[in-house]
Length: 484
Image 1 (cartoon, rainbow, N blue to C red):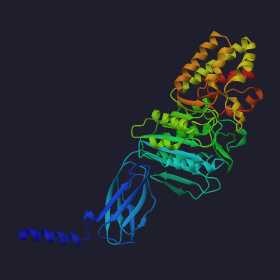
Image 2 (cartoon, one colour):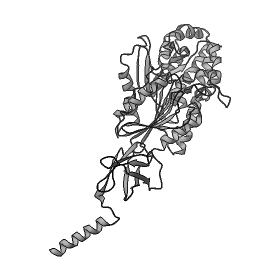
Image 3 (cartoon, one colour):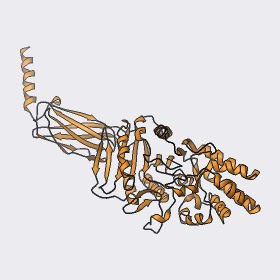
């Protein structure tokens, strides 16, 4: 028995005097072990190190993308050192923590989040002061979400924001142009670098569908204002630019479609917008009407779990919006569109446009009925801050009032096709404040009341698939027949 005791004592002596530190001497606790989230690595030294000593961290794994926010830390009174890192890929990674007289390698297993959500916060404009309200709401995100925000500020250097329990702001050291294509590309590449089950992109800004093209001149000669408006240097992104960039970046990462494309901006719930995005997202979320200044309620991020589907998350967003503005008295909407069904609706509306064009050619009185008995009474998106919204009218309300004014079996058949397709597209919607005489679907169409207005937006129309695709050009033909 004495020999056994001596052997054990000798082994303990050898281990304690060697450079091999026993496992219990250094402990590691990791929070937020999720790809795309800020992981906090808390190192606790038990019988090595001292207060004030520098401790260093190094990533040993070669592959995968990552950011080490702090490569060194100072031991506190309890000999703790905290490091922050972001891993973009799931799987096992190895880190080495070292100090003056110790070194230890740790394996960390990073999990996929159920959702990677990116918010393109274009706040270099009059919305600048409202951004922090949404950032605060975002801090309540669930542990199944990786959240990445690109924040273009007004008169300040711009930042990237990653989240864990609190936001972590990374100063970009430059002034971004959120209306520039390269800025959007870089944002999307960073988001899609996160290894996740589902992806959502939210464009946060002012919006005007695709109207007012003369306000911002693009370098390539096209003049478009749509969304992501940047007051300095007076730029914005068009729908064609956004859809093209999204498609290119998705292809690069081998992703078919985003789960959700959201537009936290005014009057983006328009058929031409939805049709333009048909190949880049499963669901589009947008407001047909002008949005209240505070936009979406981002506490919807707290509702996400590992089983949340794109359809479910889309409805959560609208539900939170509805609750947030339950006491709001002005007209507002928010809707979810099934992008897989948008093609059928676009063709149905084009067919109705062709039928109306033919009817007007045969009987010119139909033109007068539409102009005098339909157009003035349709629910439109007019607002005192957005007078051009009078040219965007609700599709359902248009069809209902058209059927009352124009008695034609052929037109009624095509009108029914529109309503049937519209029901399939608008899978979830909320609206209030429009009045009982308005039938609100949550999706608008361009219907100006004069030839001058139509002509004034002609250059815009030519950039949109809905108005240039031969399969869906019937609506524009109808507008020309109606107004010229």
